[in-house]
Length: 339
Length: 206
Image (cartoon, rainbow over all chains, first blue to last red):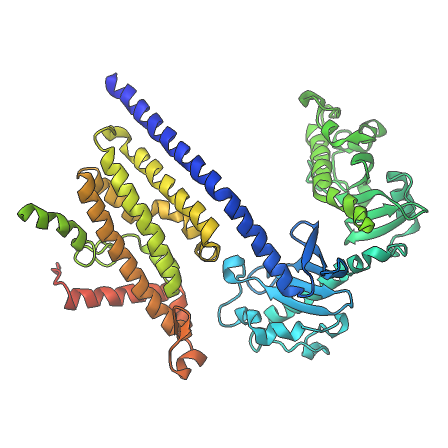
């Protein structure tokens, strides 16, 4: 028995001393580590957008706006990660207010680049990379596709991936260059009238919609061009398949309304059970709820699951919650206008 | 007098005669992965050496208080504490090296050399001898790592520690094979053959 006590005691003492020592080291190094990380990010951003001195994060880890010494907007920096030959290629692109690419930076193998050393990895060399400097959107194509970018011999896939990735990035983020002049809102013209009406019901007050994340997130503006909220699509895995849901979220971070797709629109849940998520009683539970209320009643929330269709109910709830977490950052988009 | 000579044998043994990589043949995984360039090899060698020496000292210091039955968990706690310290310090003060070594910094915990010496030596010898043993093995480990790093970096880029040396031919036609683990394995084999033939005569048993 004495040896048992001693076994436990010795383990306990060692753990105690170890954790004490580690927490001390942690606190001592924490400040320096955070400093290193932010310094590194700033260094990378300044490198691709040389005129900018300070940066503001618009979309975490994806989009920054750079301001020069006179606090004027110098351009944006965005991160795009196209699929290359052996994995994703993380690229940082500095794009000026004059719609010209300033410089790009491609991650090293230590930072996640998996392309073949000696071949695909050659995209990191200045010879390839610097081709993108001072190019406009229309120049960004491989020479064999009619553009101005010379691909690397035996590394066409990697070269093309980088080229297309940068092109997509510009398409997606160029509207952020025009941030200050957003009195002219670039409405999403691909929306059909019925979809527009649907969005207007989901997000009351909104009349115009701007597509921010392709086919997934829209900003809703009212007649006076003031942002009302966002509408996003999410499709969580339900009992028998994906459940297509449209969610509206206003600037107070409150869920306004949801719409769940019909069987014709892709819903595969069981009639009589999971299909009941489309019922008004279930859907209306979500209307005008705050994020904290979006939990099951059994977990002190305000959402009642449908009896006999718990999996479907929970799938809808979790899908909506994750969607809000993921996209709520876009609601703050408008405060940038006040700079 | 004789006792003193004996002690320092623990240190010198680890460098060649009982070199962890080429003679004991342990700790090969981080060797293969981090000896791609001379600088990374040196960084890894220093990090692992710090952990090895510290853990040998601490294990030896508590050996009388640690019950036999729970010694392995306690070794691991001690070793991982030091590895975590190295991890934080590298993250804070040498971020570029930290990024390059990546996952191999936490993997120092399962480096056979460290756990092996704790169990086979530090647990049964006094603190000073354990310190010497750790230091010797650490020097041996780092030495081979750096030698491999220099060779692999030279053959695959024509540079050593980042400084271009090689003939133009090597720079335009690098031996890419040396960057990958198979090349490293081959190199370990060549080094072992060299050390067997010219430095120590090891018995070949059929």
